[in-house]
Length: 135
Image (tube, rainbow, N blue to C red):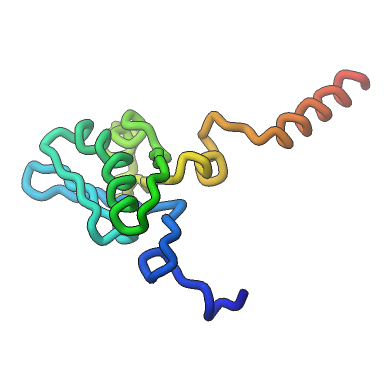
């Protein structure tokens, strides 16, 4: 398959994106989440936690409307991690927390903090531990 024959999400192939960037903005006293990857995506609420919790569902709804598939999405940060990055004592001034919604089945690939560990990695770790124990 050549690069010319490939199409991206939103240009006709109907494949949902495996990773969606999420941006946070303040509009007055309202927390607004949008995405440069999904034109119709927007979540807004006065409460940051409420808006944050609605992101995965809304991403799934927008993707379902545009390509007809309903892949479940998860966020790469927990609410606690995200709020600490935004408002925590040890945050870097001016730095933004990178937040992404990723397909649940790909979460372990793009999120190193995910609980899922590929079976091959578990076998390799067991083999290494066995070799260390036999020395």
